[in-house]
Length: 525
Image (cartoon, rainbow, N blue to C red):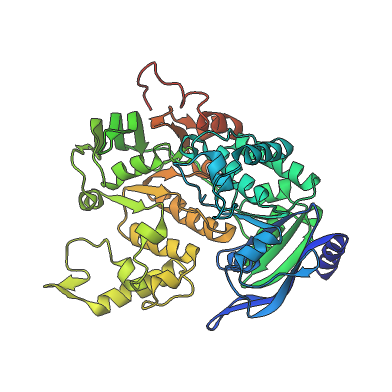
């Protein structure tokens, strides 16, 4: 390892544009970054890996001026970077593109890019000069997008180009990309990687934060791995392997669970011609046909915003269909009721574990009991049974390997993976017949994701049917028995996973193929 680190250091010393030296950051007793030293060469793409809580976000926040380091220093092109100042970071040529875009949807592309770059005392924008500069940047780096279009009319891939152009317009020479491919189709990822290579060839230096090891292997020149706040690996990508990177992230060998072949059982959930309209009459889902059987994982692919939230709301009981027939275990669903869905045997793993999966200020034991409707398991005559609550939590913490917690720990203090285990422990404790798993591994490192997937496979083996909604096509191909694609509220006919591949699914997600062309009428699932 020392030799690999030495070779990486030599590679970046030729033209260092960024150097972090002994950066340490503490939050109370927690050491988020522990004496991290790291370099970045001109025109280099550095992948930054680490499990949840490893310190990646903290380190990048220090670099971009959102946090102050307790110790250490940062230099850009040999000049010390003033700490705690995003303005100084931008002026030094550091740009950051967050996973969740920060664009004004009611503004044009040009307005979003230029916003905040001109002094307030200037009475009139020089829009012609700004447009020429944006067009030059777009042509130079392969980031074409029409400046007059409103952001709300752009695809996800186009919005990402706008975010990158914002950083380049401000003179970025070092670009931090946080999970940049999370919402892109495979074709968009391919185009995006070509853009990154063009940018690197032009001399831009890139820090690429990702959980997707295959993409890291494809795009990076060098990889650095953080674990528990420390830099544990730093070497050229040519010396890396997918298995070695996974082990470096979690400190142990990681084995992904494999899908076993199971014969599907009786139908559990059926939708026939189901539609859903919002309060203002906007169509969220149209003409959905879907069947889920026992011992089956039905994968739902699609770019974010194509109806996944609406489909999840139906299955969760948050909405009722406005057209068609929806059945759970043979019973028609005509009214929205989450409690009724739970009683019918529907378990829900929501998309956003922080906002809707747990109550962050509640303890682990309280969150584990949130969906225990009815009966006297945890209460009697309106009084909580503290001993039963505690015993349940201790059993679940042990059974589901929920780490860094006891029964009285505030749930918001858990890592993403352990918070997800709390949700799964609560859901699986009820032995649901149907499980809605909505983005169950989003934001999780490879070790935590493998643990979550193993728990879902175990539920499938015990007879549950699982609707797996995910934007990670590799996960869908790994876990699903059948896969369907949502596009603009319409669902393609599910195909056996053996007939699916990244290219076909990517085209369907972009509106080419069965999911995008279904005007000829309904189809059976």
